[in-house]
Length: 220
Ligand code: G6P
Ligand code: MG
Image 1: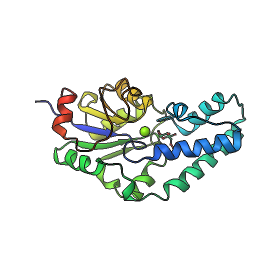
Image 2: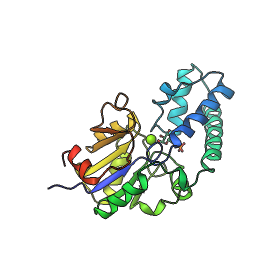
Image 3: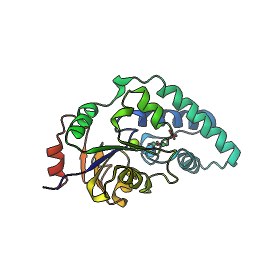
């Protein structure tokens, strides 16, 4: 029977709960520097989206217009606050089931790739001690287009020597599921089915998931 050849994992919200830290830092910026609040619901539209595009979406949400220089200052400030939060992380912050699932993936002979738009991806993987678990790392320093563009996952597949239809994408973001689908890959949503409506399968987390169950659910 057919076997998937590569699994491509998003980072923020899939491997670690940094999606929450991004929200915290953007919310602080909106509150303290822009004079409005952003809801958790609005934050769903920022997940998987690059730093500059996220700021543009926040500004347009609050009807605020800024110069490129002002935007640069705010994006840097948000990142400083975000880095303060991620610098406190330890291997204990890896989300439930991830380590075991990566091990099962490796034992099944399936390649492991990271597909993240974040420029902080590598320092985070180092901090939580799993940098070496990845056969390829595609992050915000290697791509020119954020999700929902498929670039990040197509590059991952290429580096791992897999064709798109042999890849599975694991994502918590609506934009990330769209990127995976546009890349021609199967998608596993991590989160809520009513939000990740376009994913092939949606799971709350990767706890106790076996490669065999996943293969069946995705019709490999
Ligand atoms: C990921 C996150 C986004 C974040 C983007 C850029 O895609 O889901 O919320 O905006 O990375 O992250 P960075 O760490 O480079 O600001
Ligand atoms: Mg994510």
